[in-house]
Length: 432
Image 1 (cartoon, rainbow, N blue to C red):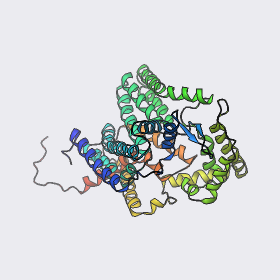
Image 2: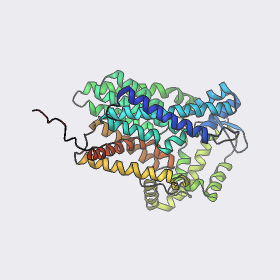
Image 3: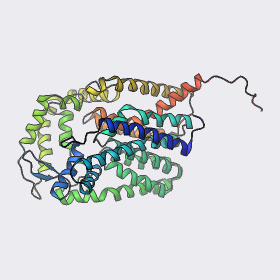
Image 4: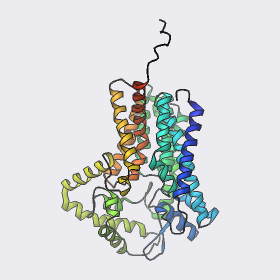
C-alpha cells in the first residue's frame, strides 16, 4: 500500500469503484417505464414533454413552472430526454453517467485527503472506503442526485483547500465555479460556499488583501454560476429564488402537524401522506404569470404548518430537532434499508474507525491534518447538520456528510495498521 501513490492510486481507486458500480447497475438498475426518477427527473421530463423550461404537473395533470428543486440534475435529465427520447435509452444514459460520477468520487476523496495532509496509505484507505461502501455503490444504480452532490462537493473542497493555501485569486475563482455547481445540486451548499469565503479571509488574516481578493474571486465565480438560474426564477415567478423553492414544504415536514424524527416516517405513514396530498389538492389550480401555482403550494404548506408550530411551542421544536439530530448522527432506525447487515455492519465499522481516528489525532498518535482543512470539514458537517435538523432527515442525506467522516475513518484505520505492523528487528539501526 505504501508504494501506491499519485496517479497509480487514482487509477486503482477509480477502477475498483467503477467495477463495483457497474455490477450494481447491471443487477439493480431499473429502466422500465414508470420507474421513480424523483423530482429532479420529473422537472426535466415535464420540460421535455412540453417543449419548455423546467416544470411539474398539478394533481389534474396540468404543467406548471417550477423552481422546486435545484436545477443542475434536472437540466441533465432534460438533455438526456432531448437526445435519447423519453424511454429506456435516456434512463440507461443517466445510470451510466451516475456510475461514472460515483466512481470519480473515490479518487476525488483521495485527492482531498492528501490536501488535508493525510499520508498516502491513509488517503488510499479513504478512497477505498468510498469506492466500496455499499450505499455509495448501490446509489449509482438509482436515479437519486446524490453522486452529483458528493462529486461537486468534493471538487469544491479540493479547490478551496488550494485557494486557502495559495490565497491566489485564480484558485479561489476555480473554487467558486465548482462551488456554484455544487449549490445547483443542493440548497444548503450555498452556506458552505459562503462559509468558504469566510475561511479564505481567515486563511489570509496575516495577508489581509490577499484573503480579501481570494474571497471576492470566490464570490464572483459563485455569482456567475448562479445568476442565470436566479434571473430565470425572477422572470418566471417575479421574486428572488436563489436555488430551490420548497421552504413551505420543508417546514411542513420538519415541524408541521405530522412531523416526526425523519422524513421516512412521514413517507411510510398513510395518514401523513394523505395529509400532504390534501394540502396540495386544496390549492387553486392555474399557473398564470404573476399568479404562479407553485408559490401557492408552498404557502399552503406553510399555512398548514404554522398552527402546529404555535400550539406545540418551543418544547416541541426542540424535541423534533433533537430527534432529527439523533437520526442523522446516531443511527437512522426509521429507514427499512438501515436494518440490513449490508448497511449497519459497514456503518459500525467506519464510525468506530472514525472515533478512533479522532482519538488518535487528539493523543498525537496520528499525523495532524491541515488546520484550515479541519475548519472546512467542521463547516460542511455543521451546515449539513443544521439544514437537516430543521427540515427532514432521510438515510441517504448522510451520504453528503460521510466522505468527510471517511477521512477520519481512514486516519483511524491507518493508526491501527501502524500499531499492528511488526517491527523489523533485522533492519539497520538509524545513523545520527
